[in-house]
Image: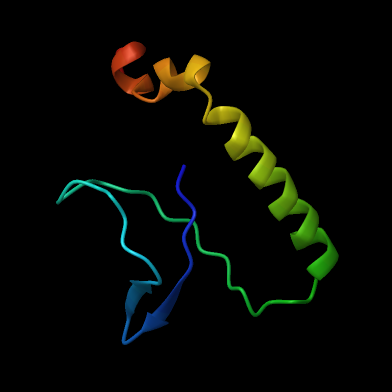
Length: 74
C-alpha cells in the first residue's frame, strides 16, 4: 500500500509527490477528505493503526504476498 496526499482540482486528483508506478498501472483509490475534522480523535487513531499496519506488511517475510493474485491464481 502506498499512502500519498494530494489535491482535487478541476475534477482531477493532483498528487503532492510522484509515485514510482509503471505507466498504465491499475490502481484502487480510497478518498478521505483531510479537512473533515468532525471526528478528529477517531481519525487520529485510525491513522496510527494504518501506519503500524503498513510497517508490519512492509517486511520481507510478507513480500511473497505482494503479487497475491498470481500466488492464489486469481
